[in-house]
Image 1 (cartoon, rainbow, N blue to C red):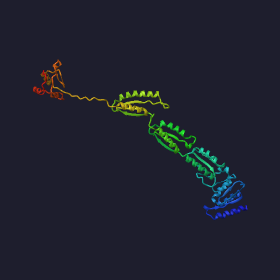
Image 2 (cartoon, rainbow, N blue to C red):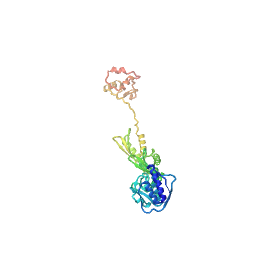
Image 3 (cartoon, rainbow, N blue to C red):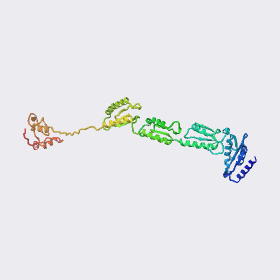
Image 4 (cartoon, helix red, strand yellow):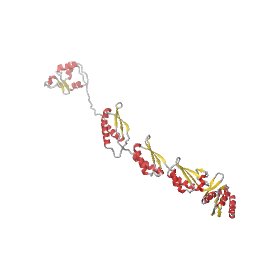
Amino acid sequence: MKLTKIILGVLLVLSMGLHAEEEKVDINFRDLKVKDFIEMVSKITHKNILIEGNLKGKINFVSQTPIKKSSLIPLANSILGSKGFTIVNQGDYYKVVKSNNAAGEGLDVSSSVGGETMKTVMFPLKNSNAAVIRAKIKPLLSRSAKVISFKENNVLAITAKPRVLRSISKVIKAVEERGEKKSVIVRLQNSSVKDIFSNAQKMAKKLFPQTIESEKVDIFKDEATNAMILVGKPDNNRRMIRYIKQLDMKGEDQTQKMYVIRLKNSNVEEMEKILSKLVAQMNSVAIRRPKKGAKPPSKAMVVSDVERNALIILATGEQIRNIRETVRKIDIPKVQVYVKARIIEINNNLAKQIGLRYGFEGGKITSMGLYSLASNMGASSLMVSQTLLGFLNNDLTFAPKPKHFLSDILQHSDNTH
C-alpha cells in the first residue's frame, strides 16, 4: 500500500504541472491490487467510479514512456477485462460491472465508434445483408460483446469496447465499399425488351455468384420505354451491358406491330388479295417449320384501307421486311402506250362534190392515194399530190369550194378515171 501511495503522489504532481490536453503520466507498479488501481485512475482522471462487488487479484504494469491521461480509462478497461470486468459510462459516473452483464446496463447508443467505455453502435448497411454480416463478424467479437441484426431496416447493432468497435467498423466499411451497387438504364434500339429480358436474366445468374449478395446483378424491365434497369456493382453492370448490346443487334424482331404501307401505283384492294394469299402461305410454312428453340410464330395479317389506298399490316420484324419487299416489286408504274389521234371532219357537200367528179365516193383516202369504188372493182387508185394529202390529213373541217379550187390542187396522175 505504501508503494501505491508513493506512485500516486508522483502521478498527481505530474498531472498538475501539464495542460489537460497534453497531460501525460508515468506509471510503474508491481503487485498492485486491482481495486487500488481503479481508485488511482479515478483520482487522476477526476471521474467518479463505482465499484460493485469485490475486485480480486493483483496487476503489474511497467511503462517505458509516459502515457496520456486520456488513455487511463482504456488501460483500466483492458486490465479489468482480463478479470472479467469492464467500466461502463452511467452519465454522471462510471461503473465497474461484469463484462457479461454490461449490455444490460443501459449503455450509450451512438453512431460513432469513439469513446472510452463499452457502448452500442448502430451500423446501417446499404450494400450488404445485415444478417449475413452479423454471422461473418461474430467470430471477431469477444464473449462479452453483442451483435444484433435488424432485417426490416438492414441495420447492425454492436455492443463492444471502443477498440473492438473501431476494428469492426473498418471491416464493415470495406465490405460495404466492395459491395456498393449502382443502377444503370440500358435502352434497346433494335429489339423488344420482352424478347431478350429472359436471356439477360439467365446470363446474369451464370456470370455472377448468387450466393454473394454484393456480386449479384438484379435486372428489371421497363416495357414503356423498352429499356432494362441493372442494379449491381459498376464492373458487373458493364459486363452485362456488353452482353445486352450483343443481343440488341439488328435482327429478327419477333414482336408483332402495326405497319401502314401506302401504295403509289396499285389498287389497294387488288394488292390485298395478292398479299393475303402470300401471307397465308407464309404463316402456314412458319407453323410447320418453327425455328429450333423459338416460340410459336405469330400470324401476320393484311387489311386494306380503300380511302387512303393503303395497306394496314400486323406482322413481326422479319415478316414486315418480306412483305415490304414484295410490295416494292409489285407496286410499280404500269406500262402505257402513247396513242396520237387526229380527228378530221369532212363536209358532206364537199365529199359529194369530190365523189361525183372523181368517182371515189364509197372509197377511202390513204397516204397512197384515193381508193374509189372503181379502184375497188379492179382499177388503179387515184394518185393524189402531197399538197392534197396534207390538206386531207390536217385537223380541219372541209367546206364546199368552187370546182376550180380542186383543179388547182389536184396533180395529174398516170391514169385519170
